[in-house]
Length: 272
Image 1 (cartoon, helix red, strand yellow):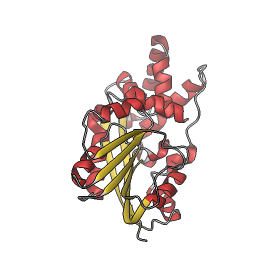
Image 2 (cartoon, rainbow, N blue to C red; image 1 turned 180 degrees about the vertical axis):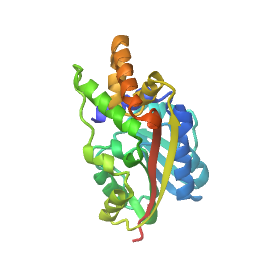
Image 3 (tube, rainbow, N blue to C red; image 1 turned 120 degrees about the horizontal axis):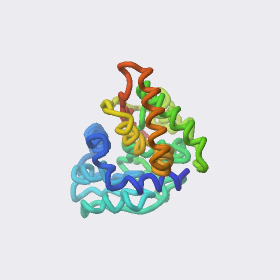
Image 4 (cartoon, rainbow, N blue to C red; image 1 turned 45 degrees about the horizontal axis):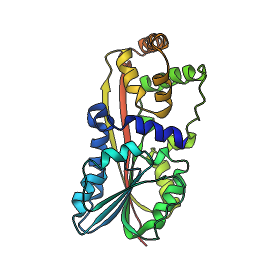
């Protein structure tokens, strides 16, 4: 699964920042504003991608602060390094499993749309709590599945059936991870690692696709499994799949081709 995710993000690196009218950038900027990094802070950005969170945070902490940003996808890091900052260090490294930083090393740690791609998100939260200094904050942007539209849920079923008919071996997603974006689930996970004071906000962006082809373009870059399927099939299968999507969408009436990208944004404090 780690290889699948890494290859997915490597493939999307050049278009990641502009997908869905810059959705990822808007999420990262909103999270940065919410967590309010201050001058002189030491920050860890886990799964930093193209630097959409680390760049504004580096400006906020200033020359007396420092940002450490790590990611497993080399192409994403190449994009991040195109906007260098003297107070930011980028490292190409796995973000799964225990991290190598000392206890209490950071005043701010972020998982900006990276937590659910990890093999064990709850272990990652435990590591974050360990690495936070007393009074430090953990910032999270986690996809919120319950706010997906009927069109998205219908499309996922169609794509899963198509994927199962292909001669492809694709690891299944980590099922429980899809619940982490629900505020009550995320709150319990944070409480379990000793982060009891939390603030939540919901971020939702929406649009309507104009056709099945437009819809599949969106779906192809929405998840690793959809990417594997839609980037590997030929034009005949693409047309068959588009026709099937058209057929299913017609049953949804006014809800056809409506797409939501929703996140739960959270800040949690380590008070002791």
